[in-house]
Image 1 (cartoon, rainbow, N blue to C red):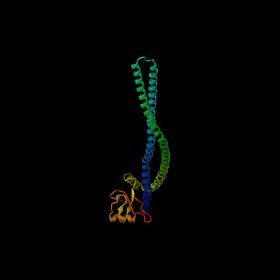
Image 2 (cartoon, rainbow, N blue to C red):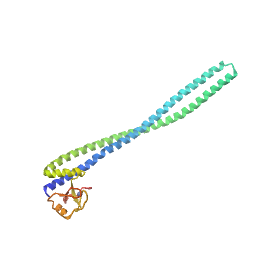
Image 3 (cartoon, rainbow, N blue to C red):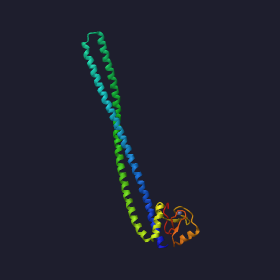
Image 4 (cartoon, protein in one colour):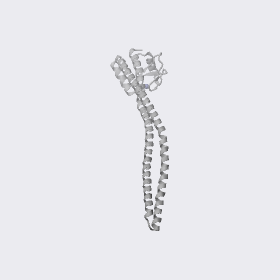
Length: 244
Ligand SMILES: [Zn+2]
């Protein structure tokens, strides 16, 4: 194998790692959003419960006020009873008293039901708070794991890029330009192995015998007519990378 092909093969290995790392890094924003959405959903659940409780508490206070004013109304009529002279006035007052009492009793029943509902919601609250707490902690942990993974991956990317710059400089300028051009248009893969001793490892096009023979001799650059990538006969001692 010529030194140039050797260098290209080394660059291929580095670029494969870069492709994989780039894919990993591209997945992170989605993963982060999923974690944040799970946490948001739990927060929203608690907020909804708090709102429900607050609404009931408002109704609760309104009912108490109504009960108070109905009690006052009844007391006022009671106070008037000894003052009336006529029978029909007396009967009318008794009627008012019964009316106020009836309405008060209705409000009291309503209040009792409302308080039961309120207590029910209050009982749910600790469980929801505990779940939210756990979810917040879990989200925080997962986000920080994700962050350190991302940091490590970015460091690897930097290291690989530094390494590939060194190898790149060993290539003749024309090959270097060609390599980068193909790499830019072919999802980060400029060099591919010949697979199963017959096909391009990039587009899987079967290669003509003369290309295969030349590739096996490993004495010059070969291009796949299908995808334009550079073809290299994989060194015997190297197992082709999965998916390549
Ligand atoms: Zn191809």
